[in-house]
Length: 297
Ligand SMILES: [Zn+2]
View (tube, rainbow, N blue to C red):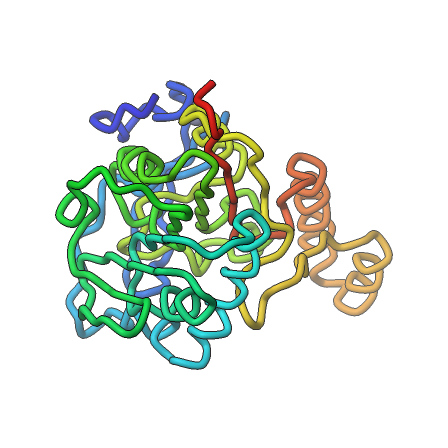
């Protein structure tokens, strides 16, 4: 259970007090640091205290990586292909935290009646796609249910993300699919990024991992929970981050002997990471699809 009022000293996932504090650099605000706490037991992390928003002059525009039409379309197709394995027939879909609406446009072009909702959206309606400005609570009061509910890169932004997950999960029809994607703290990508990992951003509250999110989906009653076997990005789609082999390590030491101890230490850390998280250490971003049982169990 998440105890959101005492994130300064207690892990909200396990109640443990063995925590590390560190101050990584914010990838979206050059020169800015944030304050992060990691639970040694769960090996996930969160930002605490929350950073004050940096001045706009130092913040990189958020939608840079999302708003480019062509990149957004390709990414939307990757996301839809993953979701489509669990929802073969197009139906009604809601994308929570839809940003500029690139995913709903792709979904609508593939036969879905697709609604997006985002507090900072510029609303539009185009064919079967409509983007609404607001939160889930602002928009849905009708008890309407959806064949698919998606949240791509959303939960890390929301201080009480578990409540958002609950609200979104409630909108899934029995037999429907719920898709969630976020950055993976338990990854080689994060270890290699060190203090400058791209996911450390002023507005990212949570640095989660598949084990914890899977457990939460089960607690909400979802079944057939499937971890995507690739990263849903155009230039980062494979399970490309492999731990260095001994041969690669030896070669690196021969090439730069003055960095030998550092290289061997990095190799050890990577092998430990690979054996601790065999299913997901290669994925810097992970996505789950989960099915709501047709009959509540
Ligand atoms: Zn913990």
